[in-house]
Image (cartoon, rainbow, N blue to C red):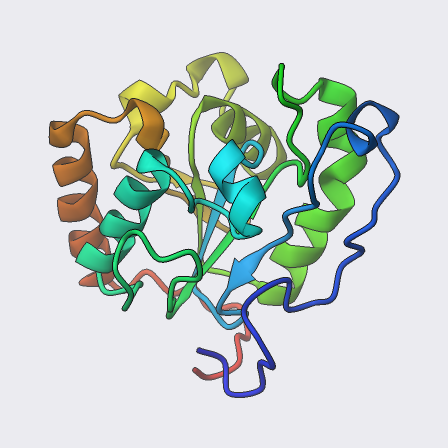
Length: 210
């Protein structure tokens, strides 16, 4: 974990009473900002909080999909807690979303993703990771459009799961959302990520030392 970090939950003190999306403010339970190591090489980005994450206030926790996700992180040395922990002990990993509020009946609208984009941009800019991990198709589409020159129609998370996509400033390492992963896909991602850690994945970007 970054030596200068004060905490893991919303470490940048982003607005927890954000009122920028009228269609979400009155139906959400809370805003779920980023969580983890602000010195991380790896930033994992999902679409929006699940019910479990909304209850815990921590991305990718609080349900079976979260446990599968945290199991993956633990299997590659990024999580030192049990998979069912509501506040996992992460190292070299930061978790966040395209949008920070959950609507109980629908996915985020395009307008809501755009409205929330400054929060994600701030996370990425301040952390300056080496690898962005889009978790699920929506995250891959949005991050692919922002950080790669690959046409959106060619970015299929099922095809690109457990592989890398070269981007502008970052590599993307897409992951099928844990809620829809098979055991074989989970095992494939763990094997892929362990191999990735064995490579010289760090770019020359003037990063601070860990």
